[in-house]
Length: 178
Image 1 (spheres, helix red, strand yellow):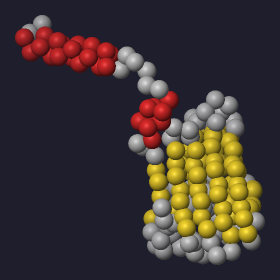
Image 2: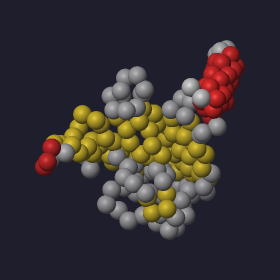
Image 3: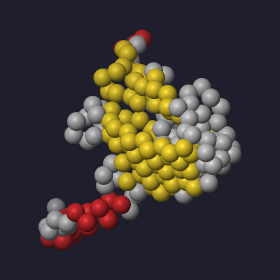
Image 4: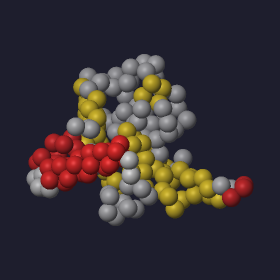
């Protein structure tokens, strides 16, 4: 072993020992939430006309989907004022087709969306919380107010949940297969 390799080995070993001693104590839940919360996504305004909009993804390795700006999936096949990037629908690893040349393709499992999306909103908030694995979307129009909380269970990997609180004259929710 030459001089440079032994110096590098000593430097790497020193960093490893220091990092082990620094991270030896487990942080409490509040500290862990604060650390993980640095990656949260907070949106304070709905998509503007013509704006490219990236849906928020939730998944657990088996079940997953992207959620649009109104807390559910985007209305399939409908033109939007904004430009959604990607598809918003549930997919499941065990819901696939084996196609030509032995290629596997995930098939859409389900879609849940508003019958119509709001034309304008007065208040808007969308917050993806990585510590507890939720997406919370709140918005208020002149006719109704909505709060949608979604999560996909990390342990029971076939379970997803939605809590929808609506007040006022809210459009119907459509559940279907894309």
